Amino acid sequence: MIDEMNEVPIYLVTSEEGWYDLMTAHDCREAAIWLSKTALSDGEFERYKEKGFNMTRLAYDVTTARFAETIEEIKLHHPLAQVWVHF
View 1 (cartoon, helix red, strand yellow):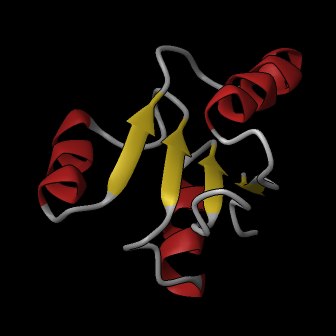
View 2 (tube, rainbow, N blue to C red; view 1 turned 180 degrees about the horizontal axis):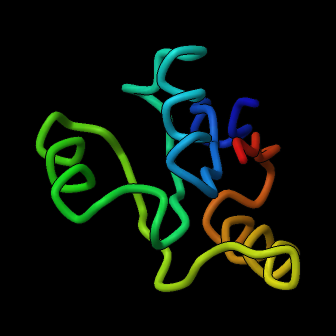
């Protein structure tokens, strides 16, 4: 969905499969992407950052127990946005 203040899509990716699903379904160059700690390897993460992707890597894996906490953390940075989740 679009961030009401910045007009960029906000995505949360929780797995490598979710990452590849996101990349095939959306043009993410203008998106804000939040990643679970192990959604991408260190090398992949750095490669996409170097390509200009706006990515934030969480210090933890997003689990069912931490899902609400993660959404709240993202909302601190994008308070009016809806967050699209790719598992």
